[in-house]
Amino acid sequence: MRKIYIFDTTLRDGEQSPGVNLNVHEKVEIGLQLEKLGIDRIEAGFPAASAGDLESVAAVAQAVRNATIVALARSNEKDIDAAREALKQSQDACLHIFLATSPIHRQHKLRMSKEQVLETAEAAIKYGRRYFDKLEFSLEDAGRTELDFICQVTDMAIRAGATVVNLPDTVGYLSPFEYGNIFKTVKETVPDAYKIQLSAHCHDDLGMATVNALAAIMGGADQVEGTINGIGERAGNTALEEVALALETRSEFFGAKTSLVLNEIARTSRLVSKLTGMVVPGNKAIVGANAFAHESGIHQDGMLKEKTTYEIMTPETIGLKESKLVLGKHSGRHAFREKLIDLGYSLSDEQVNAAFKKFKDLADKKKDVVDEDLRVIVEEKLITTPEVYVLDAFQISYGTQSVPTATVRIQSEDGQIIEEAAIGNGSVDSIFKAIDKATGEEIELEDYTIKSISHGKDALGEVHLVMRQGEISVQGRGVSTDILEASAKAYVHAINRLIDKRKSVNHNRNNMVLS
Ligand SMILES: CC(=O)SCCNC(=O)CCNC(=O)[C@H](O)C(C)(C)COP(=O)(O)OP(=O)(O)OC[C@H]1O[C@@H](n2cnc3c(N)ncnc32)[C@H](O)[C@@H]1OP(=O)(O)O
Ligand SMILES: CC(C)C(=O)C(=O)O
Image 1 (cartoon, rainbow, N blue to C red):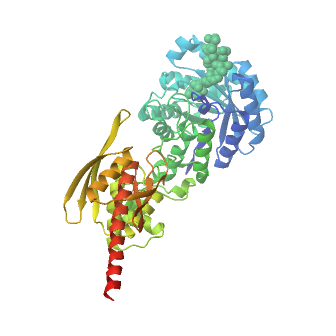
Image 2 (cartoon, helix red, strand yellow):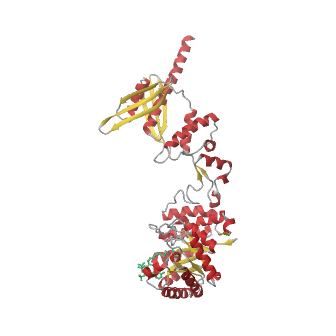
Image 3 (cartoon, rainbow, N blue to C red):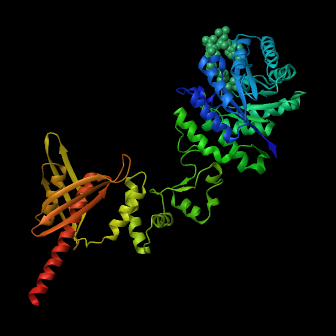
């Protein structure tokens, strides 16, 4: 199996992401984690850019001992000298020089002819080789460079002493077929290409950075450059974790492997996200929060029966504990039952079905159904009070200039629909008064509390109240994502318990009279 060298540029191209700025300590922390991940070459920065960057590259070069440390320089002696200074403590250093080769860059940016590009690059490579055994030369914007000129520059770079030649698709312009073809052509055309390593460096402007890097490997590239989480200029670089897992998962197809310690990927991704402040989207391949999460019932059922039905890689491979079955409105009974078992409930089929119905009602209203929500659903269902009244619907009219008015629709146990309206001091008070009218009960409210029982903006609110009628005191509980609905439910719940308690008090009294 062919080894693909991994060149990480999170600390250089990754740091070029707008808004990202890593200090020396942060760069060292990421550098040490990249070392644990088994990265072959770590590009630590661009020392000529600033004194701070030079210091950071030097600090990473001192701290990291088990990877080659790379520093970037333009094709001039001043930049190369800054890189020399930064890398002088490094155990294993590599100088990375670049010069753009495409007609657009030659004409507008560098204002150089082809000959000047060749001469400038050759002089820089020769100067660099006086101080470095390892030297990578990049043809910036190779993706938009004439193919014969790419071959000509590569040939010159090899003769001048480059040990790696990088052919970047700097602006993420090429299709995989075109990019792979560049490597194939260079390998076939440049006589000494086999003596050095060819490297791929892609950008994600059209969302093709990973697939282009893989196409380069198929075309003969020996090294892939990229960043953790795919961060970098504009739309970012090739996400290295994607390349590594593609090669691992489809090794029979690519016939190539990296030597990364794959189970360090999740940890590295989290660290880079934390220190750069660049949040990883949930649906990001490999390291997104949803990459190993399943929400829909059919998928969850498949996962419970055999994980390979819906997972082509295991979460353990990248250092995660396990896949997640997320309960939501698309989930089915199999996953629901499994979750209840995990939470320690052992319910009959009938109880599961009843709880499942409540769960679906909640999932329709709430994005994530969390463990606390499920406990509420199950425990509410298990405490059974005969439902003399069921809250069918309610409506509130409320404004700063108007009196709160509630209309409630309640169904009684004989199927009768009762509708009543009432005004109150506030929305909750008007609901309670309307329920009093609908049920014909006269009640004294002794206590009312409300609390949030799950997290986030769509958390469940729980209303707890205590009411009294003569000697009888009862409690009621209601839960909903809407606090007015929770209040109405708690009130009706308390009335049902009151009626139940009143019945048993009367029953006991009658028995006493008879005996
Ligand atoms: C594709 C890439 O990602 S390349 C790396 C990009 N990264 C960065 O640019 C980050 C660090 N850069 C910086 O801090 C600054 O741009 C510096 C310190 C390098 C240079 O700053 P300045 O001297 O103020 O120049 P400025 O950035 O405005 O312009 C770049 C100059 O470099 C020249 N240049 C660009 N690439 C190269 C190259 N590979 N070799 C030699 N010269 C180059 C440009 O033509 C321009 O020259 P000019 O001033 O003669 O027109
Ligand atoms: C310096 C080079 C390798 C680069 O970052 C690019 O071309 O995108």
